[in-house]
Length: 232
Image 1 (cartoon, rainbow, N blue to C red):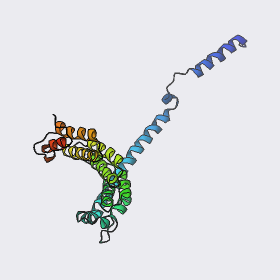
Image 2: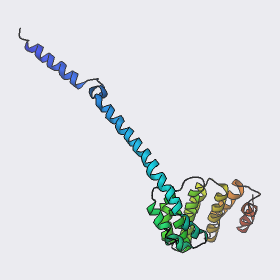
Image 3: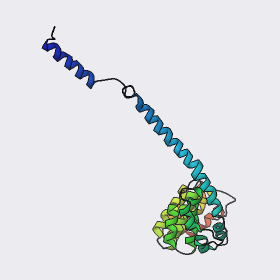
Image 4: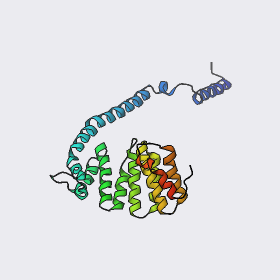
């Protein structure tokens, strides 16, 4: 018996609704898709592990060995030689930072190079190297920002120097470094006639970092009295 036209229309409508509002999970509709996704994730993880184990680690060991001669020249204050030609056929910090990019030693070479440039009065080059240095931990961020501040101070760009000294004091996880850069911040503000800012930094040292072993802290009231603000 032929189906009635109304039955045919109802069947089509039911099929359309079922197609539009299917509740079948995608992994049931496409059973291989989940396998492909998990496989891709596993390959990515395995690839990263292999890169770290078989490329980065051996490269780091090689970099540490290669930096030895440049570090020797750095320790002798032979900063130009440490940068470019430490002797014995070894690379200087500039070449090392590029050759061993992606390793901890290559990253540290940027910091060494920045210090070398600072000492030979090439301040813009020093800033560029220090900005390329990725600093982590309690000490290195403060040292990075403080050294950049020194570069700007030497360039007589004092506003930027103040910004970086402030950042160095703020980023330090070490009390001695914090006090060191707070004092630099205070003294530069004092030099520039920024009395209130200088006093704020001096008093922060006095009130927040008391230490009988610190010569800076023991003498801090002298700096405060010098600015005519001896009150506690």
